[in-house]
Image (cartoon, rainbow, N blue to C red; front, side, top):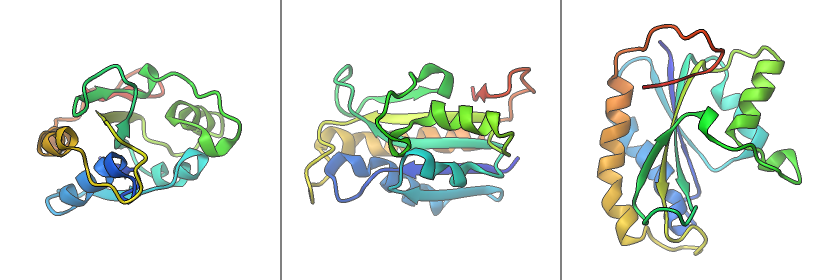
Length: 163
Protein backbone atom coordinates (compact mmCIF):
# COMPACT_ATOMS: atom_id res chain seq x y z
CA UNK A 1 0.00 0.00 0.00
CA UNK A 2 1.54 3.30 -1.10
CA UNK A 3 1.73 5.61 1.92
CA UNK A 4 2.34 9.34 2.25
CA UNK A 5 3.65 10.87 5.47
CA UNK A 6 3.07 14.61 5.19
CA UNK A 7 4.75 16.92 7.71
CA UNK A 8 3.13 20.34 7.74
CA UNK A 9 4.30 23.58 9.27
CA UNK A 10 6.79 26.39 9.04
CA UNK A 11 10.19 25.88 10.62
CA UNK A 12 10.61 29.64 10.98
CA UNK A 13 7.64 29.92 13.36
CA UNK A 14 8.59 28.33 16.69
CA UNK A 15 6.34 25.35 17.55
CA UNK A 16 4.76 25.37 14.10
CA UNK A 17 7.88 23.50 12.94
CA UNK A 18 6.95 20.29 14.79
CA UNK A 19 5.39 18.57 11.74
CA UNK A 20 8.37 19.40 9.54
CA UNK A 21 10.91 18.26 12.14
CA UNK A 22 9.06 14.98 12.69
CA UNK A 23 8.96 14.36 8.93
CA UNK A 24 12.71 14.95 8.64
CA UNK A 25 13.40 12.41 11.34
CA UNK A 26 10.99 9.85 9.83
CA UNK A 27 12.53 10.23 6.38
CA UNK A 28 15.73 8.58 7.63
CA UNK A 29 13.99 5.35 8.69
CA UNK A 30 11.02 5.04 6.36
CA UNK A 31 10.29 1.63 4.85
CA UNK A 32 9.89 0.93 1.13
CA UNK A 33 6.57 2.21 -0.22
CA UNK A 34 6.46 5.17 2.14
CA UNK A 35 7.13 8.70 0.93
CA UNK A 36 7.87 11.36 3.54
CA UNK A 37 7.23 14.94 2.45
CA UNK A 38 7.48 18.20 4.34
CA UNK A 39 5.81 21.42 3.27
CA UNK A 40 4.69 24.80 4.51
CA UNK A 41 1.84 25.15 2.00
CA UNK A 42 -1.79 24.97 3.09
CA UNK A 43 -5.32 24.91 1.77
CA UNK A 44 -6.11 23.57 -1.69
CA UNK A 45 -2.40 23.68 -2.56
CA UNK A 46 -2.06 20.50 -0.46
CA UNK A 47 -4.32 18.53 -2.80
CA UNK A 48 -1.50 17.59 -5.19
CA UNK A 49 0.57 16.08 -2.38
CA UNK A 50 -2.12 13.48 -1.64
CA UNK A 51 -2.85 12.32 -5.18
CA UNK A 52 -1.82 8.76 -6.02
CA UNK A 53 -1.52 7.51 -2.44
CA UNK A 54 -3.72 4.86 -0.83
CA UNK A 55 -3.14 6.08 2.71
CA UNK A 56 -1.79 9.24 4.29
CA UNK A 57 -0.46 10.21 7.68
CA UNK A 58 -0.47 13.95 8.35
CA UNK A 59 1.68 15.53 11.07
CA UNK A 60 0.94 19.10 12.13
CA UNK A 61 0.80 21.60 14.97
CA UNK A 62 -2.50 22.60 16.53
CA UNK A 63 -3.20 25.47 18.89
CA UNK A 64 -6.65 24.89 20.32
CA UNK A 65 -5.98 25.89 23.92
CA UNK A 66 -7.90 22.77 24.98
CA UNK A 67 -4.84 20.66 25.87
CA UNK A 68 -1.50 21.30 27.51
CA UNK A 69 1.31 22.08 25.04
CA UNK A 70 3.04 18.89 23.96
CA UNK A 71 -0.17 16.81 23.96
CA UNK A 72 -0.25 14.50 20.94
CA UNK A 73 -3.69 14.11 19.39
CA UNK A 74 -4.68 11.45 16.85
CA UNK A 75 -7.79 11.56 14.70
CA UNK A 76 -9.27 11.07 11.25
CA UNK A 77 -10.63 13.68 8.85
CA UNK A 78 -14.22 12.93 9.84
CA UNK A 79 -13.42 14.21 13.34
CA UNK A 80 -12.44 17.65 12.03
CA UNK A 81 -14.85 20.52 11.59
CA UNK A 82 -15.12 22.13 8.19
CA UNK A 83 -13.26 25.43 7.89
CA UNK A 84 -15.26 28.56 7.25
CA UNK A 85 -12.58 30.43 5.37
CA UNK A 86 -12.41 33.65 3.36
CA UNK A 87 -10.57 31.87 0.54
CA UNK A 88 -9.63 28.38 -0.74
CA UNK A 89 -6.09 29.08 0.51
CA UNK A 90 -7.35 28.50 4.05
CA UNK A 91 -9.34 25.33 3.54
CA UNK A 92 -8.69 22.31 5.72
CA UNK A 93 -8.44 18.57 5.27
CA UNK A 94 -12.22 17.99 5.32
CA UNK A 95 -12.58 20.34 2.37
CA UNK A 96 -9.76 18.56 0.51
CA UNK A 97 -11.51 15.22 1.06
CA UNK A 98 -14.76 16.69 -0.26
CA UNK A 99 -13.12 18.18 -3.35
CA UNK A 100 -11.25 14.93 -4.08
CA UNK A 101 -14.43 12.91 -3.68
CA UNK A 102 -16.51 15.22 -5.88
CA UNK A 103 -13.85 15.22 -8.60
CA UNK A 104 -13.24 11.44 -8.25
CA UNK A 105 -9.52 12.05 -7.71
CA UNK A 106 -7.05 9.33 -6.71
CA UNK A 107 -6.98 10.50 -3.07
CA UNK A 108 -5.99 8.40 -0.04
CA UNK A 109 -8.82 6.26 1.24
CA UNK A 110 -7.24 6.05 4.69
CA UNK A 111 -6.03 9.13 6.51
CA UNK A 112 -4.66 9.52 10.02
CA UNK A 113 -3.72 12.87 11.55
CA UNK A 114 -1.20 13.39 14.33
CA UNK A 115 -1.37 16.89 15.80
CA UNK A 116 0.71 18.31 18.61
CA UNK A 117 -0.84 20.99 20.81
CA UNK A 118 1.61 23.88 20.69
CA UNK A 119 2.32 26.87 22.90
CA UNK A 120 3.80 29.25 20.33
CA UNK A 121 3.11 29.01 16.61
CA UNK A 122 3.87 32.59 15.67
CA UNK A 123 7.26 33.70 17.01
CA UNK A 124 9.42 34.32 13.97
CA UNK A 125 12.76 32.60 14.40
CA UNK A 126 11.68 31.01 17.65
CA UNK A 127 12.64 27.50 18.72
CA UNK A 128 10.32 24.72 19.78
CA UNK A 129 8.94 25.28 23.27
CA UNK A 130 10.15 22.84 25.92
CA UNK A 131 6.90 20.78 26.04
CA UNK A 132 6.72 20.44 22.25
CA UNK A 133 10.42 19.54 22.03
CA UNK A 134 9.85 16.90 24.73
CA UNK A 135 6.87 15.46 22.79
CA UNK A 136 8.78 15.10 19.50
CA UNK A 137 10.32 11.64 20.19
CA UNK A 138 6.93 10.20 21.21
CA UNK A 139 5.31 11.76 18.14
CA UNK A 140 7.92 10.13 15.91
CA UNK A 141 7.44 6.79 17.71
CA UNK A 142 3.66 6.90 17.23
CA UNK A 143 3.86 7.84 13.56
CA UNK A 144 6.47 5.12 13.00
CA UNK A 145 4.14 2.59 14.62
CA UNK A 146 1.30 3.78 12.38
CA UNK A 147 3.50 3.40 9.31
CA UNK A 148 4.28 -0.20 10.30
CA UNK A 149 0.73 -1.04 11.37
CA UNK A 150 -1.02 -3.87 9.60
CA UNK A 151 -3.41 -2.54 7.01
CA UNK A 152 -7.03 -2.42 8.19
CA UNK A 153 -9.68 -4.37 6.28
CA UNK A 154 -11.55 -2.62 3.50
CA UNK A 155 -14.08 -0.14 4.81
CA UNK A 156 -17.40 0.49 3.04
CA UNK A 157 -17.08 4.28 3.36
CA UNK A 158 -15.12 6.26 0.77
CA UNK A 159 -12.68 7.58 3.37
CA UNK A 160 -11.70 5.34 6.25
CA UNK A 161 -9.90 6.31 9.40
CA UNK A 162 -6.74 4.38 10.15
CA UNK A 163 -6.75 2.47 13.44
